[in-house]
Image (cartoon, rainbow, N blue to C red; front, side, top):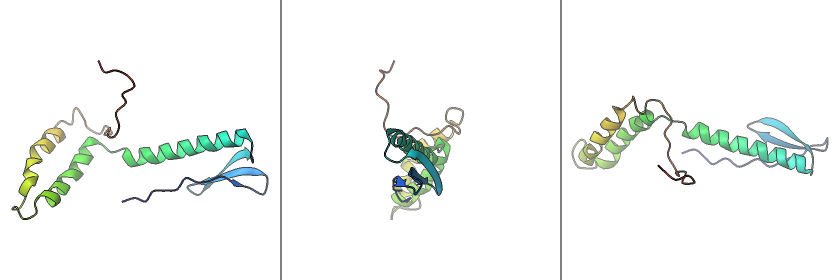
Length: 120
């Protein structure tokens, strides 16, 4: 499992600028202690966190299902024959993976739903 990365903190550069290092690259945010430097730092951190999130979660439905079947075989076949309880999941996986025209390589949308707008 991937380790959680810490959010980088700004430091005061000898030139008097606020500097933050993200993935080995230095970004200068402006004069240390000013609201402009704080705003630039916040913007950089938001972009960094969003970039990390999209890199981790951008998987297609098909690729998630392809990884789920071996997991089912390992998890649900303990002492119950070659496939055991995993056979209960096979029809659903086949149904979803056979619907490539609907899902294909679109990223899977997992997590919290956006309930700010009413559904129609």
